[in-house]
Image (cartoon, rainbow, N blue to C red; front, top):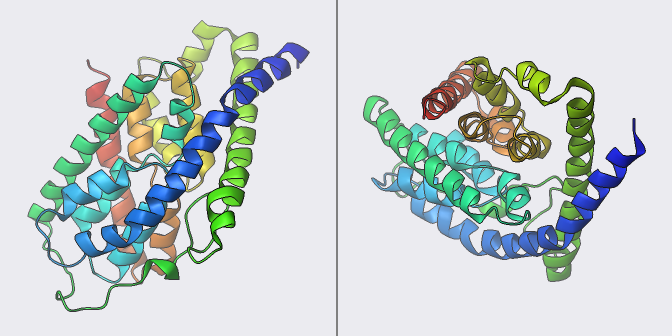
Length: 288
């Protein structure tokens, strides 16, 4: 591997580290403020729950998808609301893109499209699937019972300096490593295969590209969303394919759903529906 690939990737990462750290500190403040509100507002029988789930889910990282999964397994929210949160969740992609220069419009485009898809899908699913939720007086799980969702999971009852300084620093470090490794891998592929052949490897112009992105997005790890974001920023995959992958990227919420669900067939059906919606969205967007 050429030395200049390491240097180039290292410079790219160092340039965005301060931005990433600031973003993650801000996100800790937002997530700790709104976790309780989310639990209260989307729980039980609420006709605006899907759109609220879509709006809360678009907040970066996968904390809200973790909460939504926990609420769904206790039948405190509808299936449409759960999938609205999953679809609007972008895990680590938004901070990674936002840390780049002149990419604010791309972030707005991604969030806007995903919120629309999540809201429409949520209401359509609830229209055809009778919600099996508890009565309004049923107990709702406390947010503190679940781990904070990030590459370094932690409880919400930590001291302030850990929550707002230590964990954002660790999170920034882990995401920076992911970006560094992915940048090296993509740089190596571009240099050895060439941009034209790289497009063929990732099925450029084919229905298989959004399908590949969906498969990556379903991996319940923050590296998946980082990879999708980096591939789109470097022009490897289209906007539609990136949306397909990020719609499927429910983060650790998918793991919580699998772990806490008592019906594995239902869980597989939910993930299949998530994949189909994400794939359809990507294919349609690639037509424009």
